[in-house]
Image 1 (tube, helix red, strand yellow):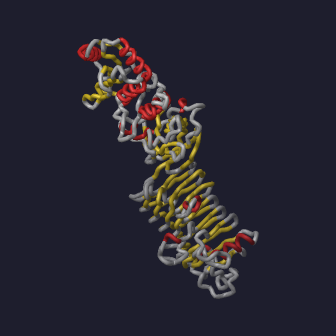
Image 2 (cartoon, rainbow, N blue to C red; image 1 turned 45 degrees about the horizontal axis):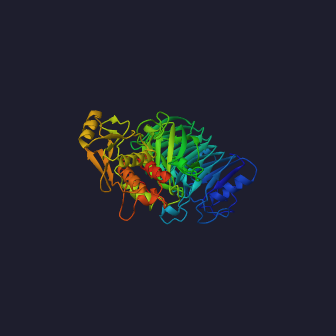
Image 3 (tube, helix red, strand yellow; image 1 turned 60 degrees about the vertical axis):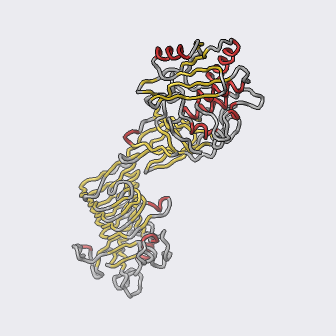
Length: 535
């Protein structure tokens, strides 16, 4: 027996200095404190009983941040009856003396106020122990490793049961610890993993991991950035094992309509990327190794006060994003207030698109433009029956008045300049019959025509797709009216209650505000068809 053995027995009644079983410390915390501070290597032998980390002169009572700390030079052993003279004298068989390290510091049967972590090992060794009742429900590191948090040293011949944590309910391993002969049962992770290996080079073997539970992730072993060497695992029926693979992903943010603002839109988009194993908020182009497990999802969201809460993501490692292709803009791949992409669909590069919450003239998008954008049925669907449409044909029905025809052509030209999709130079047709013949010859649904008459606009649909739009105005209509009627028809954005689109695209002097008109269209055509932008 080593002369540097420190004895612990909660039932001892002697001097309490740890020099013998008779004079043993009654608190394990005081014994560990003595071992850490005396400058020598010590074996700490602990008799049967239940020990709490907040007990002893060196601990703070009822403090759930207290843990039993084993450091280099300490060899903590349990399962003594209290009279052994050597390690070989112990009875280690089932039914023998049991040394329990418990996080139930309040001893009130309520786990939520238990110690965050029962046992912390940074070096040395600990074994022949039952570790239970930890509840890592705090923040940061205090939500990992309810039973044990191990960064070095060795944990061996231990039972970890009845512990809780967000990650690593029974044990959280990082660094280079050794784990041998562990039984891990009946633990619950609110997120993932009874045993959680993170950024480590652990050596582990002879593990029994069974009947653990988890709120959302795997119940048994979980690996994130781990190079652990593990062998000889007995897994129970409810145990799963998964590896969080690190995938290099580049995120390139874009602001819808940023080129329409004088000097560009001032606020850069702040966006958040998260998986079960990481969360980070970033601005600008970012490349990161993102950990994501097989059953996990990549989530992208924004809470930037200068942007709407809706965000769009486009796969750009294999395709071009909307507005960077010829023809009609592609629909974005994902759109929501929080975009969730299963790991199986994750690619290596995304365009992350944000929508400004103020217009080019500083108007509040939520109260002005959004009702029109969200109400629009999209003049031209970007896909019809699986066929990509290249352009919208435009026509003018000849009024017999060259002056009116010129006005119509000019109004269409102004609107064509702000459309996010291609359209043809208007052709003048003699009558509606000629229009129908022309449309049939083209064999395409989408076209727009302008004719003389009372102010108005309409969109006509066929089989769920808009077949054509029309607008009309009288010869006496002023320029602003002509433009607004064409714009309303070709965008499907008009009045909503007393909220009139003309108030935003026509300035006080009657001129056409092309930037405001184009911005609304870019919002509409950079969203999923029929979707709603959230303020």
